Length: 121
Image (cartoon, rainbow, N blue to C red; front, side):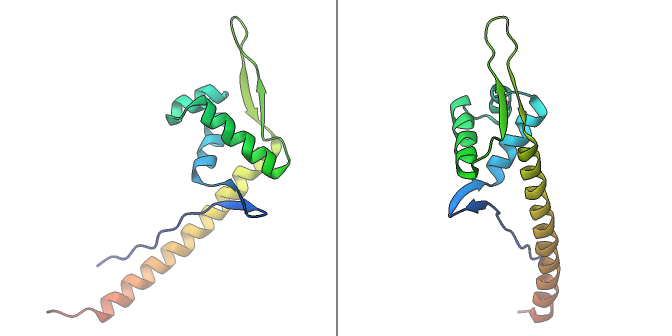
């Protein structure tokens, strides 16, 4: 028998949601693709949803996370993460890495403990 410990992590400021798995994926996709619309397409989300998510994060934190340049006909738009957004991604990754280590430790421990308790019927 194998036991798995699972978790979901999000960060709040003053009780207001800032970033969780979805926000992390949004910022990561913007960083990789270089545009909000491209990130939205990659993630299967609407542009409006992604833009509103970013806006909400920025307002909650009181800092700019994404520098967006308007595009349009003949003009290349785009977006890049600010240094603050890069730091937020790094912090979130560090939290997830540490939580994964804890979950793996407890998964192994509970698997061992349950095995010790198991008996044949």
